[in-house]
Amino acid sequence: MHATPERRRLARRIAFLREEAEFEGIRVQPGSEEDLRESIASNRLRRPMLVLSDDGEFRAVWKGPRGERIAILFEGAGQGELLLFGAVASSGKRDDLVLMCPLEQMPSRIESFDLAPVWRHAC
Image (cartoon, rainbow, N blue to C red; front, side):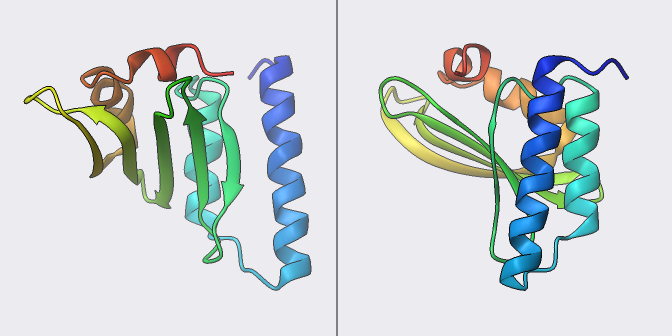
C-alpha cells in the first residue's frame, strides 16, 4: 500500500485515538479498527474526520457546508452503521437516516442520497 499524505494523516490520527483510549481506559474494538484500516487501504474513505466512541468503535465523519453530515460507524466483521443527517428523502424533505449495511455498500448508499457532494468534496 502506497503511503499517501492522506493515509499518513489517518494513520497518525488512529495512533492518537488509540493513545487517548488507553489513557481513558477505553478498549478499542479490534474489528472496528481492522475495518477502518481496510476502508483506508481500499480508498473507500475520502478525507474523513476520525473519532473513537466511548465503546471503542471508530467513526468516520464528513460535514457539508449546509449542515449536512455523514458518519460511518465501523462495527467489525465488514458491517457498519451509516448515519445521514440532512439527507433528501424521496418526498424532497430533508431527513436524518440510519442504515445498517456492509461497508462495501456504503459509498453507493451515500451516492444515492443528495449527500454525494459532502462525500466527494469533504474537507
